[in-house]
Length: 418
Image 1 (cartoon, rainbow, N blue to C red):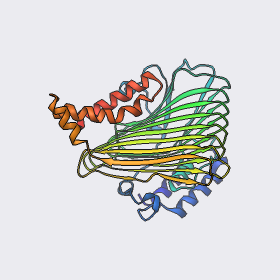
Image 2: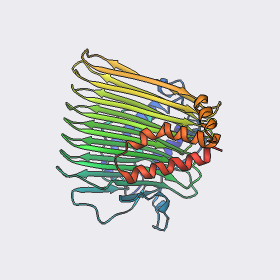
Image 3: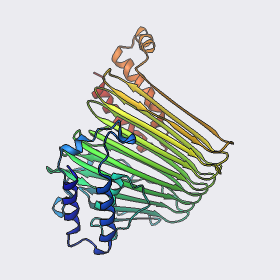
Image 4: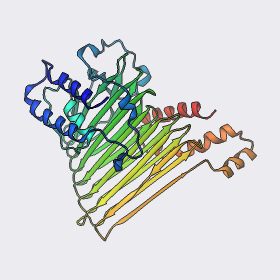
């Protein structure tokens, strides 16, 4: 696609009769900014390790009402036990469990009637999402509520056409409340492009456990922007698993605007063939006595490639900050490539900050030792890889979600340890 193709899709969206005219001026202004910036190229510093030719070679269209499912699609392969499930297929809200607790409200909007611009970064894909957003889901908890079962948002793309979907997810955790949100992106179509923006607000003394799973088919692209704002004494725990898709990129912005806020970001990328996954993070410490953690790992096979670019900013008034970054990568192939760049930007003096990065192959001495004890090479390799990734998955608090993630890892390992 070139810019004129995006212009045609935008004109198509604006012309929809069901679309609210109130939001048109804002959308047009946002799309104009997108046209001015254009899509990133490898000459851009933050994109020099990511090839976007997949998007340029394909023609995508925004979904129509005819792309909505009749409800006959089998989603049993994606179900996670003991969760409330919201299903969005090809950008259209399908159904929701009827037993949602009264302390939580889930609302959806598939045609953009109540579209409002969000506080975001003016990056090309954020601008594209804001102007083409065709599905919105908002999750709000009541104050002092403890939601025991996770909310599972399943984004499924299906069909024969190459679709471009721009969902927006709003998560509002009211003061002294707690919840678990799972975003899962899957597809059974040959090719599609999903460009997601997520906005999470965590009020005073509230907590959010946030899990994101990218398991799309091999000819898909998923680019997402995540914006998190934390108030006093709030807790945010984020984990992402990437085990599918041709191209995946996560831009994560966390703003610790309240005192004593804790932010933990972690992720695991399981890549094969020519898959590419990139994670760019900015954790902004604005107030004192806050804690942030970045802990990301990748296992790369075939000609897969990955990027970790983590940045922690400690502002002048953010004394007593505790910030740690870790990126560890395991290369199972000589053709696999990883680019790692943890960064600290510190303007305060009374802080504890550390970062580190390692990339390498399996330990040959450990493999030899295990084989000398009667364990064959394939089993020894599996044990070492499992030991490498288990730390991250074991940190997941919900046992059903943890079991589901380990099952996905075991399936990936079975196919990549021949």
